[in-house]
Length: 187
Image 1 (tube, rainbow, N blue to C red):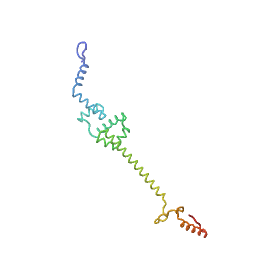
Image 2: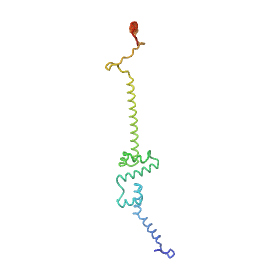
Image 3: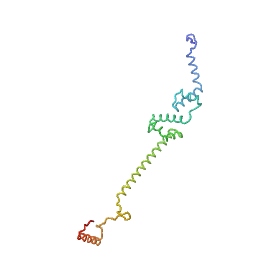
């Protein structure tokens, strides 16, 4: 039913606009809109899906799916702000990080996760350093002289320069006798 404007009657479009403005001014409508927007921000759903979920489920989403959706949205926001060290997918694929999200907010989980990763890297470096030290010690021990027989220690080389003169004369005489007999002499 159309009414003419020049007759002073209100048109259907004007009636709809007045009804819409009256509804949008109602506190219940404002609170409902805010709740739907909150669900959209937390879960990443569009407004129709968020409204349907609120009407069907009777409240905010709960459980792991809701936590995951909120965390993914928060991570995306942090990534857009340049606050993440890795890609969003890398965080969400790590099972340890996902478990942290069940217990704490995203920012706290990120700080704890980064601290644990640094701690693991430091421990790995220390293990590698320790392994390198052990390999150097093994190589140094292998370079030591080994005894000819297992139960007798290796003899030290004779220090002819610091030997007493009498002892040096005895060795010299034995060597000369061996040479005179035709035996090969080595020191």
